Length: 326
Image (tube, rainbow, N blue to C red):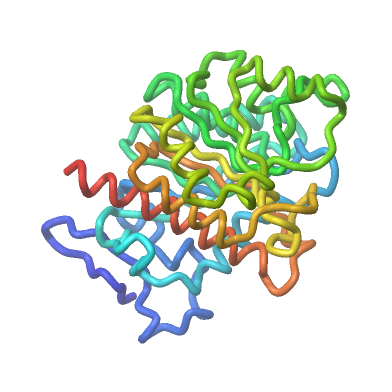
């Protein structure tokens, strides 16, 4: 199998399959056609799937999101002009496959994700996780905080996800960030929601969220103030803290991401999301997740394509920082 970046005795990263020799639609659908982790023995950035959606409150199907993103990522190319970087040449990025979790027991699934994330992070890799529903953000944050201490959080989402329980359940896709605050895995001086919008259960939702330390940049704020001003505000709030980014694809308007479980009108465009992420390239991104892609509701892979490009930008940021730190 040939690659854009060939194996090298000096340890040069192994890159994607060469699309001039193997058509993009042929061969295994790893993320960006990168090697599997077992093919390279180790990675600086591990792309990991978590096919789990037992924590959803409306439409299921996000368990199929990771593989849909991988399929859409066949069109990604090795040079990222927006960040002037070839991420797969700067660091070893590999597809670590899926974390197999129990679909019938949320508590056990949360424990399994955390244990698998601990193993990957202990190897020295950063994680780019493809969900799955947003429940998985909690065990991922626990694992990242175990390594880095409480982390800054940028949470891109239509919804707050800081509710207390659903039907008495503490672990759902609407509760991960309340649990994370309660458990002390977040740096409460550097928490922000981005892209929130839509109806709430009551004003108390916002009051509780503010008490937890979250700042809010709504989708309307992005529209009125513009990407550059919003991104500058986020950078100032994060500072030099270790940063975790969690992205629910429903932060995008349903016109840009119909394939999701709880769509809300009035969201970001895919261009706005990508530009905000590019503006965060100087932040210390330690890991990230991208969740809630539900391909059964998608059209012409619109959502999966947007998600694959979003994961590509996040991976590029991490690869650049890894290379700069060597």
